[in-house]
Length: 316
Image (tube, rainbow, N blue to C red; front, side, top):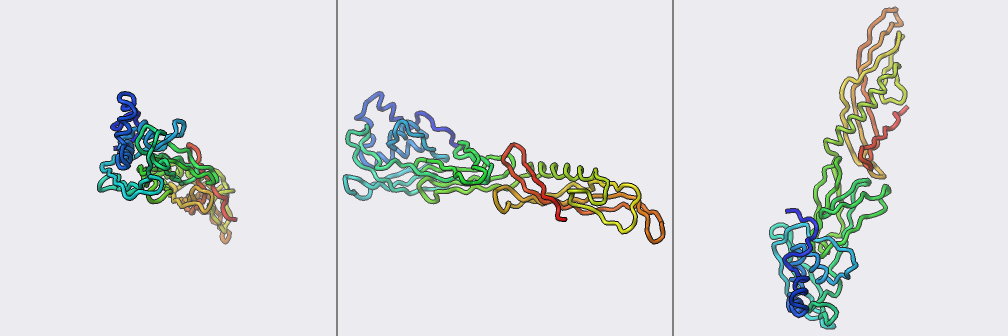
């Protein structure tokens, strides 16, 4: 089941407890280090934004980190050893059984009179995750859309999430097929590198652009159309104007561009040529009807709503 926006309320509605029974009940819910951590994890599992903010110790004005993209089935906490200043380390196991489980060490301390809870985290359990991906392609992280990175790739996309929430990221593009990559915030890798493969829709769009380019080249009535990746050499005299035609639909292949993002595109097609030719050795006139290969190389960028293909000039 896909997790969407955090619900204001949920299984751990500490705000309701505060409203109905007061601070004493809330403090009782978190009267031990383990109970405090378990209450926090239950709020995370339930997407309970109100309780998460309270239990994590986030200021009211702080941006809300991402919650859990999964459906956790297991959470458990146990205290290990006391630390200086009355602090206690708590080991917690959290996640979906049989899919991914995270073991996290939280450090909590007595809350005193600073919060309505019995304990508090020494530092809010928040971690950042860096999201990398192709230039010009947006990403969706836990159903939140992240804008495409800068055209020079210099601006990384950094998101924050509650520890140990599952962060699920994928590319958001109609032109690429992308797998969903997941990490547990604060556990394991702190970066996600998204990659995608050109899909059939992109292949069709590029093929259409190549077809239009080659058909435009075919309107030139010369043996070697200017700026075009094909031609035909004839040793005899050509009478009249040669006529070109696109004989076969282009085939297309993609590979990562060497620098600056995007893709290198290689296309190939067969061009047909017809011409009236007079043999120099005996003056006999023949009808030339043959084919010539066309090889196209270009650079493809996906920064807009339409793929942009820039075709390289053919070698002289």
